Image 1: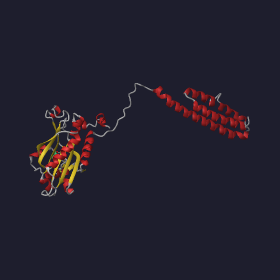
Image 2 (image 1 turned 45 degrees about the horizontal axis):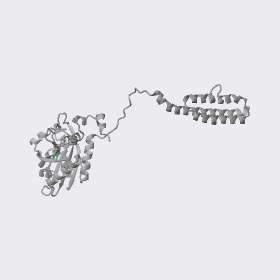
Image 3 (image 1 turned 60 degrees about the horizontal axis):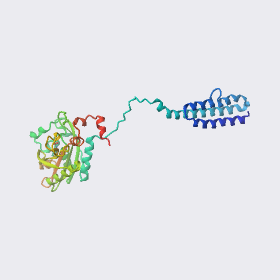
Image 4 (image 1 turned 135 degrees about the vertical axis):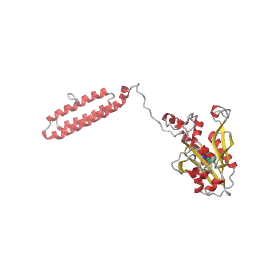
Length: 342
Ligand code: PHE
């Protein structure tokens, strides 16, 4: 064999070999192809490598390098094809039907976050903006400026966590009313969502930390009609068409004060254990901002009037989604939260 013939033979093995490797459809076929190409005894390439010795001395070096490179190419192609065939066949071969499936957890917004966002959306549509205040609050903003006298019985409504003599964890979002009134001139229409803290026992319906949403509207000529109309509109958007009623109530920082009930969402007002047979569910406290609150914040109470409300989105989430125990809102159990993924 001349050197020229030798190199041509090498080239044929390389090209034909590549084609046969590519068309091998099973691992057994590939092994067969491998033997005919690079098998130690009868492989075509192995044979050619032994032939090297018969070439003229001066050509051996170059031809040997070509043979080695052909071998490397073929081995590499066999390796790649083996992996392709393995990927195709091994799942069936290695499939263990008794293995527990791997669980994939899906993130989801917390139900209380969903409700807060929904409420923010409704009020944003009618011109309210979002305001925020600190959770560690001065006693004055939480109580004093809101018309709680130091010994007022209303103070009993709040069992407060104090951080120091005059700093506490706010017991409601109402201090944001005062901070907003101090910072911006009327007209004011704000919504203030945030966490509040009370020294409650942790039972099915009370938690030591929960979220509230405060609302405040102040301008010239604002009346109780605005309060009723806006809050009724809100309830109808949040719950779909629903009856509402206002009951007289008491808060030191509003006068007059009213709590708003909506038709029980569980029994449509017929009366059930959920609403203790009344057919109504309380969803918020509200009232006309007390003139002394406006004055505390430096707003002219002769010129301006306003109304405010506070509600608990946690309560509303429980109503909306039929959540039976408030603890579910705080456990961060992924199996619970996952149900709110959408
Ligand atoms: N701050 C009151 C509470 O926590 C709710 C409220 C807010 C009532 C604004 C009237 C006006 O119960």
